[in-house]
Image (cartoon, rainbow, N blue to C red; front, side, top):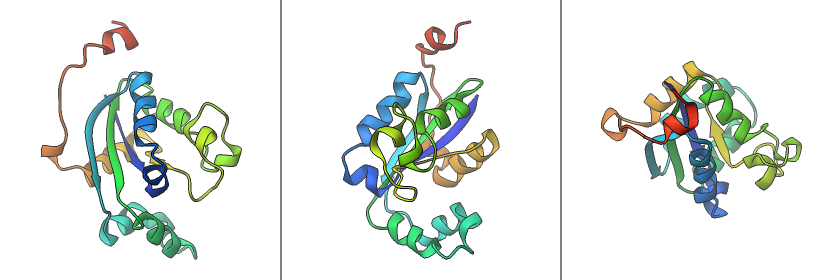
Length: 151
């Protein structure tokens, strides 16, 4: 099974879009295996965005991500789940994202873009482990999956 991390960023929380964002993943047939709201700390931000640490806008990202709580969602699905999640989220810049995607329907900015989604299967595993402890993830049978993926 493929895993992915979704972070509903401060703008998604402040605009009251957490339920809408979560429901899009559920309607697609993805399985929620973890869900929590918290204030993010510098250490996790620096680890999560280490690929941007040398960029001049990194301090702006940190300030934005700490401006209010965020919601972390761990999702699981069969083959192609991570790619499907990336399609649902849409391109980084909301003004370029197609209608029907989360960013296309609700975003107009490149940096204030509602959600983070893991960009690969490998990254998904790493990011889920970064944001969720083992006791915060749940294994269960989601009977609906037989109606989403078939046999």
